[in-house]
Image 1 (tube, rainbow, N blue to C red):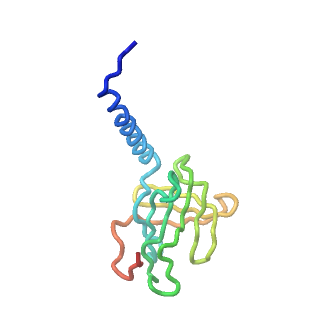
Image 2 (cartoon, rainbow, N blue to C red):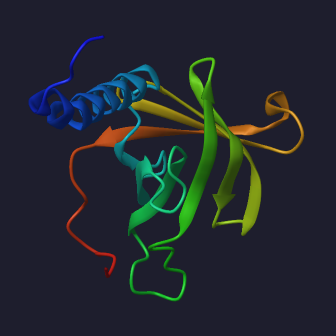
Image 3 (cartoon, helix red, strand yellow):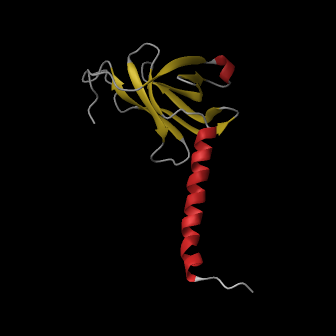
Amino acid sequence: MKKITTWQTALSPIVLLSAALGMSAALASTQGDVNGLWLTEEGDAVIEVEECPDRLGSLCGTIVWDVDAGTPTDTCGARVIQLDEYSDGAWRNGWVYDPRKDKTYKGKLSADGNELDVRAFIGVAVLGETEHLTRTERLPKKPACRK
């Protein structure tokens, strides 16, 4: 029988944590590089896409800049994307919210470099509309959403 030393026992959690973090990073890289800031096609809003803080493993998009910030039609802080599953090169199994129409649809999201396609649909994806977003490095200066 092999004797386990104290240092091996102490290193065991570190090795497990390192492996878990490595797998998490590998998983993220296989799910497309969608995290970050995305400018809408019309240039009227910026959506921050990241892992949902309240739904680990899911993807969320929140409006962090709105051309109408500070007005009654302000959509700052609205969660507009929540997708729970990544498969076949796209995020799916969730919803997409259109604040202009105040409607929620089934959703699908896929990225190709600096372009993000957000598909909103009822029933099947072929019967929907796609919004094309472009990656941006920073938020426009004004008007600013309040935090």
